[in-house]
Image (cartoon, rainbow, N blue to C red; front, side, top):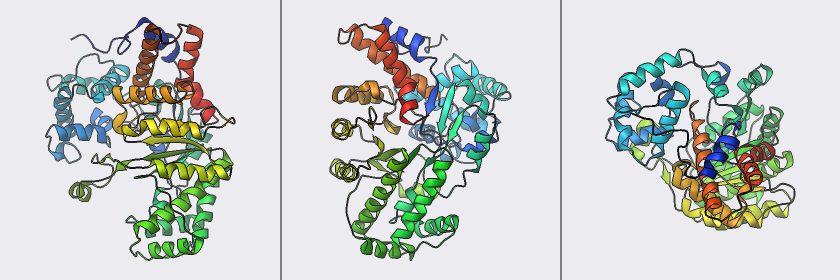
Length: 463
């Protein structure tokens, strides 16, 4: 069967083909937000088979298999790896229109030289080919082969960042930089808060009793991360909230959380707001980028959450009214001249328009595109979702200042998503040009393309 992923895949015009092949294709990758384990990079992990590399921890693939009626033992259970791969191979052809079909075949082509179609019938051929190639591949080789310049991992404030230290002192040419993710310290209303603060106390070498203690502890960890090259922080929020409270009330709320007492919704909102405001001030002071991810319902299936835990592929889009709270949050920082560079990601594509207009209310002459509409995230990083996000940004802001794509992945093969994004970007630009909606100025178009693919992120994250 002839590969459907030929060199002009998704490139419907001559302009698009020229932009991709001559400007976008060879640009390095800045993967500024992902969930790769830095330890696996340091140890240069090797994989025994394609199932370990492809299906281990990939909740996108798990969801697809569940939607095809596959039993859980073949997904996250104890079935042999070969049988798990077979079940996935049988499911994939059913997923026409799903980006998984494109991602998987780009990965098979780019890393293993396979140009056929993965099905239940071809699974054995693909299994053998991939496993043979994996004998000579490793985490670092996959990163280097992908032309990656920087990886932004996602790290707990209590991390000692030892793997980042080792990588920075090694001859590995790719920057592997930590990103600060303090969600457990903000989630006073969730299980495990008290034990996490105890862990943070041990990390800082002092007991945390008051809200001021907690702010100081986080500030110390932010400084520690900054000394290790950190350029960004990330917050995963169910929704954006804004509620004020004085320090006395915050101390009382913290005391309840530390004792394991129930915290009301109002108390949690005020606590999160105050701590997020504090963190944002610190990020601004150090020139970091703040990323806010929101409008997500995590673990709505309580039965499966009890069985499999978080990040198992059971989350969904949330419908929230985050605009009112977000503008108040940003305005609070702005009044103090402490609004950091900020990337806003909503899991709900219905939020694109208000996000696009809110950006324009808080931009700055200090950096072009200071407030960013983040790339199509999670359930939106398919062709239509990427197009919608970029069209909305172009309609309401400046697409040319966009910092482009990220993987948000735990897989060393998912850099193919950058190629996928670049093809969609070039096709969109090409359509506008050939429709007569933008001049066919190759120099300007080429620069725009390369900026969105690489240079904007390089500048934005001070690399």
